[in-house]
Length: 113
Length: 114
Image 1 (cartoon, rainbow over the protein chains, first blue to last red):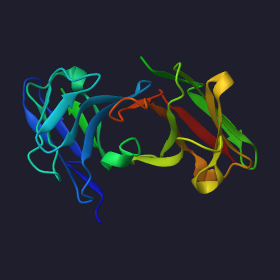
Image 2 (image 1 turned 90 degrees about the horizontal axis):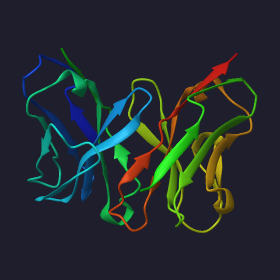
Image 3 (image 1 turned 180 degrees about the horizontal axis):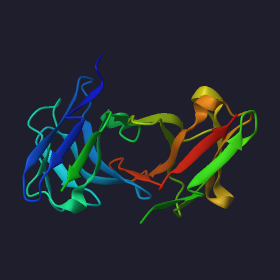
């Protein structure tokens, strides 16, 4: 099992550009989520999904879109990047019955200039 | 809303010394409680969890934590620190009534001196 994979590992964007952060898992997990990690702020939930076709907002959803067309993939889209979105982004997944015990990907470090 | 407070953003101990990382939660109903560890440039890894049953839970790498309902605490301890324990530690809670979304504390960075 590859677990939870994220691409790219690093990305630099200019203000106003758009991009998609990729997340995939091969554990057949129903629950997937995106967090951002900022110094001194811990991890904050952006969006989550409880299954294919079902997504919902977390604590800090503004400026981000998600979709879940398959169980395996949960991409995060930045519509118009802003410097405030400079952060490390983590994707996580878990089984529905153990949805509070999440497996994390290695993260994507994003810088917006 | 649930919240998690970790006392001390940075803790430094000597190798072989006791490690104590503090975590308090705010909830009228005991939530599920977790400690995650993040090694440099890596994702988070579950260290231990409390859901039900025994209030003293043991995790990986010799860590343990005790759920104290009266103190709304879930402090993480390890009797003897090792250099490899240097990492950032996050306490998290999950509302039993929610869809399992985790709420994280702000983290405590542990340094271990030789």
